[in-house]
Length: 75
Image 1 (tube, rainbow, N blue to C red):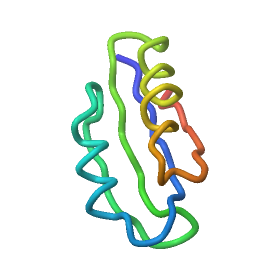
Image 2: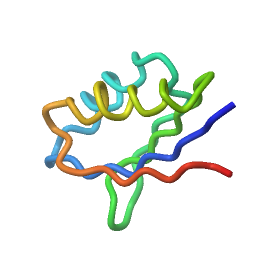
Image 3: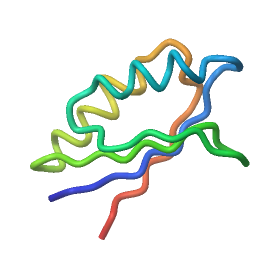
Image 4: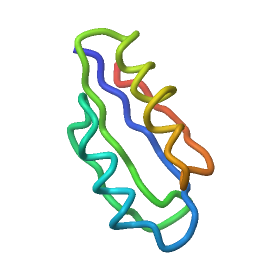
């Protein structure tokens, strides 16, 4: 099963709102606020890579508070 780790930068002070919104998306297994260069990490699992890509491109990256993403694909 394809798995992606998405490192996300958001606008300031959106933690609770962002976590609630992302947790409602199909395929999201975990979302965590982190310290360091990124604000959040989201773990996505889906039945194929197209669905993983669609979740990132059409769902996560469309959230208003998201400024940038970096996606790491598990091998």
